Image 1 (spheres, each protein chain N blue to C red):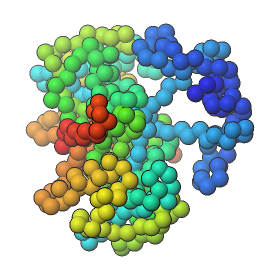
Image 2: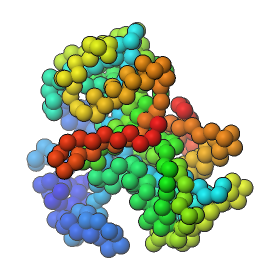
Image 3: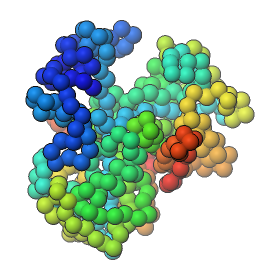
Image 4: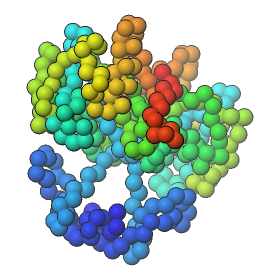
Length: 189
Length: 189
């Protein structure tokens, strides 16, 4: 951020009066431009023991597999966002939705909010952001070709619960240690 | 938003190519300025059957009572944000944290993520955003002087569970109907 979106003058990165962390502040109109984490909402959609995955037609991770998920928009609920993304990416509808996990990823300032539910009629068809959509059992999941660590983690939690015959609800975080290795902590269920 | 924060030229509110909803788009550098919901993280902190509330020293709702809560910052987890806000507003520490509810409020593009936990030593002291902090039983809660409907709703869910002797985890939404009346739907637990 270089310019004030309100008045067009230059912004400065400094700690505003009464605050305790640097923000972009307009030198002309004094407006403080707050920046906050974004929510990514998505689905683990099941049909006959198989999970819906989408092969990404966009960067990042073009050609790798992911759960339908994307940035929540203003004026939506988290559930509406998850349903919209699933429809946009896979033309798929979901029933019997339940919140499954909330995972913070502070190193990219994102919070994933994932639902689980039943894929209606087992139907999917690629939307413009997907090359391909398909249904996979736990054994068939392309574990080595998943797009993001959070997707791998969500699927692992899901199948672990599914195999136990009982679903919990998870809250957790994915961090990077000093060697940039990703550490996952699930700190409540 | 009137100006591009990247190049300082004027933005236009229009549907970008390949998108399906209006965004602020720079006419000069073509940057699309996405706007997304913000997360508010907070705590229901209990000590000896009493809950920590803060009397607001800031607008909106100056002088009304609230749970410690505030906007999540970049590079935080939701739990860190809830703890930081509780410390900033009430100089209070929490132990045994558990996620309690995630509530979307689409008409203000916010998602509340509330934790529950134990207030360490029952200690609190007003931070700069609070006039006063205090502990209240269910009967003592100033129900008619709470700052926001989401606070009332979170406390109602909490005491309902507490009285049953078992805490669930809730996902829900608060909407406004055509008469601007607030409708609360708790759609998973």
